[in-house]
Each structure stands twice: as C-alpha cells, then as structure tokens.
Image (cartoon, rainbow, N blue to C red):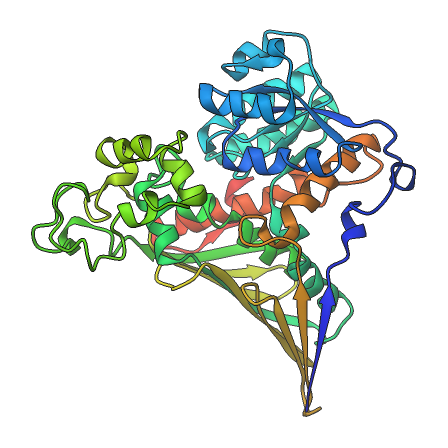
Length: 440
C-alpha cells in the first residue's frame, strides 16, 4: 500500500513571515558585498525580501557594469562603491558583516583581512582550493571571535532538512549506507566546467571541490559522524579534442559543420532571447551585439572539444565514517538534467529521494507500505530549493544574536567536507585510499 502526502515548506523556518520582535532583529544588519556576480546578487537579494533584517550598504567588484548594477539595485551611496576589496579594506569598517562571493582562489585573502578588520563573514564555497588555508580560516575566526559561515546552501533546503529529520527520528532504524548522485547535466558541465570559469583545477579548484563540496557536506551531515577515509576514481573522458566531430573549428561561429545537430552549439545557449544566468556569465552586457562578440572572442564561444579544460567529467568517491556508516558518491556530467538523487539504507527500512521532483519515499521492511512525501519548495534550481534564502537568514540571525545562535554551516561545521574533497582528489590522482588524518 502506498500513501502519498504533500508538505508545504515552512516559511517561518527562516523568518520570512516573522516580525522583527519575533526573532529579535530590531535593526537591519548592514552588509558589504564583495563580488557582485550571480551568487553574490542572489544572496544579497534577501535584503529586498526582508529589509528589516538586512541592508546592503557597500559593494566591491572589479567589473564596472556589475558594481553599478548593484549600486542601483540597493541604492548604495557613491562613496561606498569600490573597484576592489583592497580598496574597500583601506577604509575603516563600513558594515556589520561582509559577503565574499569572488572566484575560488580569491576567497582566502579577503576573508582573512575582513575578519581582522572586524567584519563577520559569509563566504562562498569552496573556502579555498588549499586545505591548509581552510584550516587557517577557522583559526582566524576563533582568534578574532568572528562568525564565519560557508555557503553550503543544501543544508538549508527543505528537501534535505526533511531527510535529516526522518533519519534523526529513526524512521529507517540505524543508518548504514548512503548512495548520493550529483547529476551535473551535460549542458551544465559544458557551461561551467568545460568552457567556463571552473574548467581548470589550477585557476579554480578540482571539480570535486568546486562543484561537489556541497554534496560531500550533505553526506557528512546525514551520516552524523567523522569521515575516516576515502577512495576515489575519476577522469576527463569525453570533452577532449579527439572526440570533436570531423572539421569542427575551435569556435562554434567559425563555420561548424555540425551546428544544426550539436547539443553544445554555443549560440543556442548564449544568443537566444532569454539566455538567463548562462548568457549573463558569457556577457555582463545583455545586448545581442555584446553577446555575439563574446561568442567570437570569449571563452563561452569555444567548441567544447577544443577548450583548455582539465577537470573531470565523471568521478566516484567511497567513504567510511567513524560510526560504521559507508557512503558512495557519484558525480557525472552525462545526465539529461541537473538533479540530486539519494538512497539511504537503514536497519529497518530505506529512503529514496529526488531533489528534482522534491519527492521522498520511505519503505519500512516487512510492512508492505510505502509513504511518499511531496515537498513544495518556494524556489527552483538557482535558489537551491529555498536553501539560499535560509542560508542568508541563518547567517544574519547568528550575527545579530552575537553567537548565541550557531550557524548550521559555520566554518568548523564545513571544514570536514572540504577535507573530504581534498582527500578525494588526492586519492584519484595517487590511486590509493586516503585517510583524512593526513590533513591534520
């Protein structure tokens, strides 16, 4: 017998429906945004939903168009607009906290300096492509007594919170094994990890860190214990020159003979009328002329088989936790859609779940019953199923409470998953099992 019930997400969980008095926020937290790209503008957008909780008062970004767009959106004063974080930090502290949403390799220095100057910090993941710097960020937060939260937004998504609730309540008994799939999506791989900013481990970070420290964090959170060791395998197998169609040029607009049939033909992604966030990544100027020029000259106009990418397009990680839980994580570009799917196996039952459909299925052994939970989240893919807003609210609440409320993604809660990613990459490259205590 199958029972199905729908669950509307609880907006009060992150304060959207609560008044100022209800959560103790009598004055809005002032925020400086460093990095006004896609993620930075999403996180800062919470200030428009709840101006009584948070206000954007300054911005720093080297791109004039982006920083001016941010200035206008949040009505920032002229003298609070900066071309770099170093220019910003030459001034006395201008806000209560700071959002650092720069590129991967530009996280560590501004975060360290911000905490020294008195800012609390919300830091985009990954913390750093260097494991020692990750540990140093934690020490810096402790040294200065700052709140440092990491943007592991999936912990806040109603989908994963419901799964955690089911596990903690013992619905499937003692958790034994986790299978977690990150279905990257063929188009997302091409955009971000072949043509895009995250296509090189040297200039950005390994894909297991850049894309999937989210997922390793979720696995560690669900497991509820310390990860002891990992073994990993992965390759860059498909997006390589030898797989290019005969006669394919270096750029899609240079007379590609398979333009009509290639699913990676760049103009079909970046020159369409509503290209969305992908088109914005290719060109900050949304005009057709600017986007066309980007196809002729910029990285997003390149043939996916003739790029300078070196990160994997598929990888698996096996994990052992101290409480005898085992886990397997698979990350693959070769999926139709971007989604996350899970199977959690316990001593009394199992949970199967799909983030794409927001469905969770519970099966208890020997009962002959299935229970299906259908969640109704407030935001879609870009908002991580409602996780983005909850993340920001949790950070604001932690700062306003002066540490009495602990962020679910504090730096110390987030370090383990970063070390799991570093260990996975070391295992993949060195072809051996890696213990996490190698990184202590």
